[in-house]
Length: 222
Figure (spheres, rainbow, N blue to C red):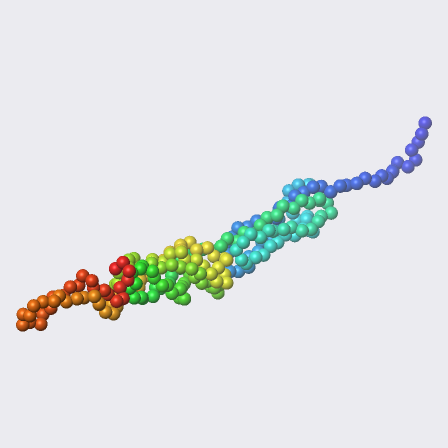
């Protein structure tokens, strides 16, 4: 009973944003003395064959020089996607110092111990980046034994690092070796030696008793 005169009509509807997850890139590297950078991200949940290039309003980057853990944080929005962000990271591991060389031990006079006094002012660090500053914070030295001799072996232990860039380095070996001399100690005088009384025999020879001799300069226990 009716004829439709206008066969068109209008209506409204909402297109809600699709959900997508943006995961920023991660990178593990080692300290090299230069600023290192990381950027970019991947996305999951994109529709219709779209890829990360459609997310023009999203960016992610991080830069750092020193060893440590740094979050790669994404920021931004997109008109078609409700985004969830998952942070990646830039992880810069400490560089390795394989060996500390150049530590010397001072020659010294015998003192009945094996203690050695070390000189670390000329220490060199195998693996240091040119321009960085490292120093020896601590180190202990011991002679192979207490006895006086030349060219004695000295063991260096408990080496640790200090200096402006020490936080960027890991010491692989905290021991080293060197040599030094232990010089004989002086006995200033000997006291307590006595002479036995005797009958006149026309000679000047005297019989001595050294049982109670004392040595000025001797160390306890020697």
